[in-house]
Image 1 (cartoon, rainbow, N blue to C red):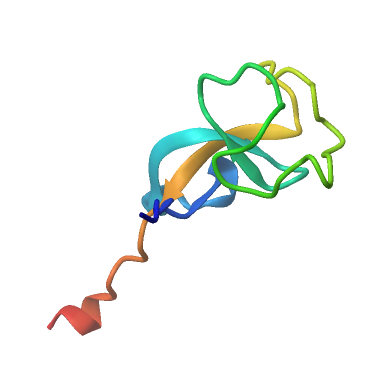
Image 2 (cartoon, rainbow, N blue to C red):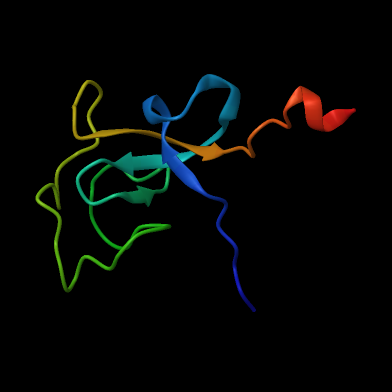
Length: 87
């Protein structure tokens, strides 16, 4: 069985019309997505590289509000179809 993870990105880097649901916490340093219930940057991410072999600089830090190294990760929605292609 293969689990498919929808494409995710940091909320502020995606235009508002392409932002989907919040999927987790996105670390801007290691580009990994962690579950919303995770309080600290530890363990394996939902999507991203394995930190056992290459730890992030923020490994073990808390996902505290106002920190600049993480932000909510949102699902990236498909690009809207141009108006000329609809006709």
